[in-house]
Length: 591
Image (cartoon, rainbow, N blue to C red; front, side):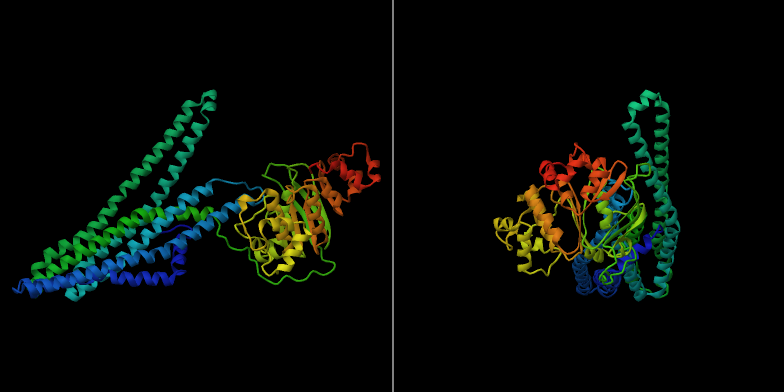
């Protein structure tokens, strides 16, 4: 089975579960006892029992065979249990790979959500899981069953074993030689089938345009060509089944013919009648079924496995870290910025207008920045860039002097905490929810933080820290309040609130933001109310001419967009009367 990494991926999957594969092999050896003993016991039953006139002895030998069959049946059940321990983890690895690839494509610069990875997850991964299990079973079955049968033939007579092994090996060579061509035709069949599906879907969804442009004939010709290609690929694949039949005939039925033709010569050499019959038992009950299962399994499910896994490996990158090292985070020196953005460029798609174009900015340790602007201006995108969740088209992001592109996930989580608008709360105790980012926080620290952020009343209503939280019974504002306390307790020096208080009332929002402003470290607030900007020491506004930063009063003088957001239509002079009056008139305005 060729393909980009198919063989290597399969080998790694088996090697990673050596213990389970070893258990599978052990039970397979027990399962192959009937294949090992069948011919020998039949030969003894015939020669020493029935032909010698000792009927009970013959039955006793056959009784031994029945015991071996029972043991083999018990082992078969254990084989299937062991198979799950090998197959299911491999399926989980592929699912993680598909999910990682989908998330990477959706969150990269210019990326977008795509439903195709979902199809790969639910369809292709399940095909690989099923066919992988089938391949393990048929290859394992052939190796143990054929090996046991050949050992039994050797015990009967080495010459008989050679007569059977020669055509069996020839059949395997014929099949192995045809396998690459079968795989190539299977790839072609899948490719032309997908092309037919795309062509038909395009013609159906665009039928009005086709009729309006008078392109019916051209469209029909194109779809007909795709149908013909697909039919040709199916016919070619069907013809390849003849090679499977040839290998089965050579490896499975030719040994029977050879044994029958050589029987008189073998008897003259001293081989007993029971031994000849035992050899035929080995071929017809063990070697033939094992070879048939191998050829049909590899020629059917095996080809689907190789092609489907090949497509997954081509389209989904494995979730490997970007050569990151889990090194301790050094304490920043006094002159190291908490956040440094250098030459950031980001756009949604190659032809889109840049959200950020060669944007640079520095935040010192302890600064409090509010980011405001109209909806869709890029505020949340900036938060994702700073947090390292979105990759810029150009430029770099450094937190505490370290590039987010070179920091491992655990270290990155220790540098910053991002609280999104849709707060995540899980079913569990309130304490577990609050300590999610700081498991070592004691009850005193948690209760102090609850009071500092005005969340102590919520904790009391829920029943205290030990109370079980049901996310479905919480309002959006209550979930945001729990997420805010969780972020406050986190040891990360940088906190990014991405409209994380939009469901709180203005008074509680002011309490939360003021608490974060007094917290050691740096604070970035993606503001939805202009009051958040008034409270901040520094404001970044997404204006028509691009991002512009300064204090509240500076931006009132320099940015028409900011003045519009604040609502100061009477001119800049109104700002001199103080920020409090401005806030009282515009608290409900959205940024």
